[in-house]
Amino acid sequence: MADRTTSQRPAGRPRSQEADLAILTAALDVLIEQGARHTSIEQVARRAGVTRATVYRRFADRTALLVRALEWANHDHDPAFTGWRDIDHMLEEWAAHLAVPRNRRLLRRVYGARDDYPELTTTYRQVNSGRRAAVVRELLLRTRESGCFPSGVDLDTVQEALSGAVLHHLGTHPDDESAAEIKAYFLRVARQLGWRPAVAEG
Image 1 (cartoon, one colour):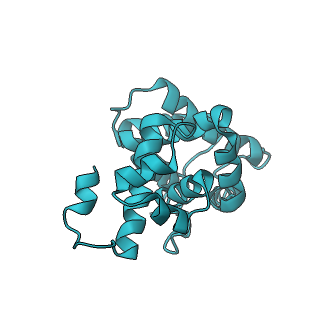
Image 2 (cartoon, helix red, strand yellow):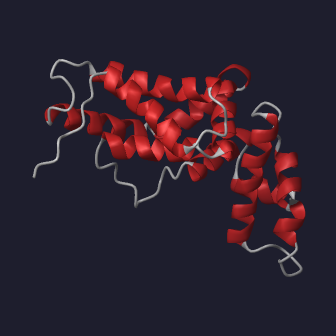
């Protein structure tokens, strides 16, 4: 892995952008392989092909590094992301993400950190400010207003149930399921929660 980040670099100090990418990629690799508790700045620096000082110039500590790596992996600050057209679109994107085994392993490591390295999940939630959760909530509101959810449905419960469905799938389904199979699972859950897709006119 280190060879990949160094073989195409000119001699001397790596360019800043290249070093950033190498560090974030290495942080995710080590997190997936060993978990948050056993991830260290030294391991990440070695994997990225940079010095510890290079990492510390960018990140104050392990938590700051891992939180930034997760933000990068999840495209949390992507200005192009403005939400989903409808529930079907959202579930399709969720399924496509979960169809990638690496993404599944990363998510399991992050949820597992609640016990062995709680600073990671706590800080990530604080820094991220629940942006995507807010986007999901806004979509659920629009869906109820359009009549695709029953008017009296508790949207907090719906959102928690959909999040729980992701965790259930991560823990009980094989990692080689296709995006179509995963989406079908999410659609079954959504229908049990009262969602009915809009009927196209014409």
